[in-house]
Image (cartoon, rainbow, N blue to C red):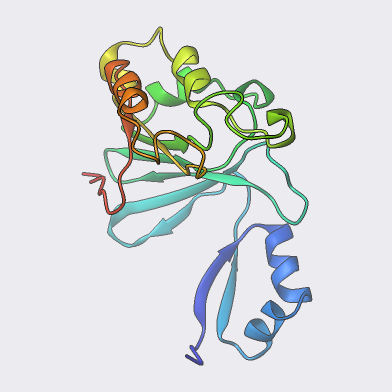
Amino acid sequence: MNAKEIPVFAMPRMRRMLEENAPWSQLVTLKNIDLKSLSDREKINLPGGFTVEPFLVPHRDEFSETVGFRIRSRSQSLVFIPDIDKWEKWPTSLTDLVRSADHLLIDGTFFADGEINRPMSEVPHPFVIETMRVLSGLPRAERSKVHFIHFNHSNPLVQGRRWALRQVRSAGFGVAKVGQRFVLK
């Protein structure tokens, strides 16, 4: 496309990786992209009264940081955590996080242990059933704010297995769909 100065927001390690490694460094050199720095817990102000706040989450950080985002309007917020290790590795309380947001899109890579043909500890993600168990003490209205995303091909939720979908929905949680929209008022 030979785009010009497309803003690309990146945390420090990701920024360095883009600047120092081909073929991405060519995008910087030719000014196809314009790197904008992000920092942990530093809000970015956007038009219309929106803010985006990146925050570090524990995950395999071989090449760059792993982050989640809190997107706020004037009166609501959405938390986006597509990739994370087990919840207990993160000092943030998941139940408090759910209480603090209006919508949450969180890692649902795997439904349960034994889903793939290798030790699940080698591919750390919170299982959907673990997340539901952690949040089971919350009122249904709080649990309904949580939507699982980022499914591995082995996950019965992405395969459309009705028993898995029923289990998630009957527990009060959601499964995000392609093209689904969340409106922040």
